[in-house]
Image (cartoon, rainbow, N blue to C red; front, side, top):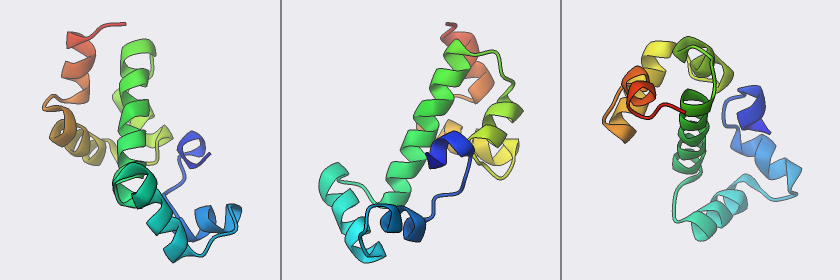
Length: 96
C-alpha cells in the first residue's frame, strides 16, 4: 500500500500492520527476500516506475512524485544507478 500512496517506507508502520516488532519485521524481510527492507522497498518502487514508463503516459516528474521520491532529480539518479539509463531514455528504448 505504501507504494500506491507514495508514502515513504516506514518500518514501524509496516511492522505494526502485521503485528511484528520492527526488528522482527526487518529480519523476516531479509529472510524472505535476501535484501534489507530499504533495498526491497526501493527495488519495488523502481519496478513500479518501469511499468509506468513503459505502459503509462505520466511524465517522469509525475511518476517520481506518485512513487514518493523527494523530487524528479533524485528519482532520475536512483533509476539510472539501477538501470544504467535515465527514465526518459528507458521509455524511449522500451516503448509500450
